[in-house]
Image (cartoon, rainbow, N blue to C red; front, side, top):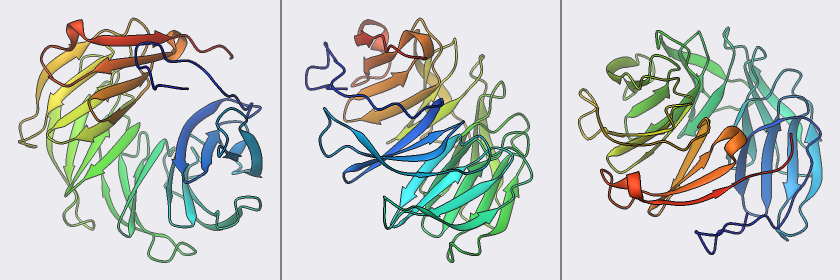
Amino acid sequence: MDISNLKEPKEIGHCDTIGNAEDVFVKNNYAYVVDCKNGLVIIDVSNPTEPKEVGHYDTRSSAEGIYVKDNYAYIADDWNGLVIIDVSNPTEPQKAGYYDTIGDAEDVFVKDNYAYVADDWNGLVIVDINDPKEPKEVGYCDATDRALGVYVKDNYAYIASGYNGLVIIDVSDPTNPQEIGRYNTLDRAWNVFVEDDYAYVANGYDALVIIDVSDPTNPQEVDYYDTLGEAWDVFVKDNYAYIADWKNGLVIIDINDPGTIDTHCFAFFEISGN
């Protein structure tokens, strides 16, 4: 998507991953896509108008979330747990390590030497990845409902916990994570992005919910925007929130002043395809 004109985003390139693309992480000239039917697909996006697949690795299960750090792709692979792929050569990705998280791994965030896995009904699982070939669990915290999305900032893990809303977990000691706050977002929280003092929650049919987390023990909603579709994911850059709004496509929202976004939707873009 070309977003140089935020009010008129337009598609400029496309690459079919065969199955259903669930998540993407872009690093350097590559887009690392997890496809629930096709595993990890690595796409060369050096020319955005002509993206092309250069590598592929079948992760066995339904690949749902991805985070890329250094030469490794960390994949939340549903019932197959956490799968670590060596992508030092994007044309020949190779499995480096694996950890069965017991639950259904839905999302993953990597910070320092730890992978934080949103493990669906099994809550938050913290995995030591100091040696990617031998990952090992060091901590766990039950999120009560489903742990579907995770974002880690400073000493806190922010969990999109389905109908349980936003759950905040203190991970200053990864071996002993503790829930310290939560906020019921009313609908199903699918994913979350944290910027400054705000958590931006992709909250299903309740759309985008903005929560003040300056006090993690007492999170408070400060704004909301109905995207008309079903918000499944969100990414924040500069003063804009980019919403993956299911059948409604891409929605771009001006979030420069949380509390007034009801009049600041920049654009909708309907994305064709399955």
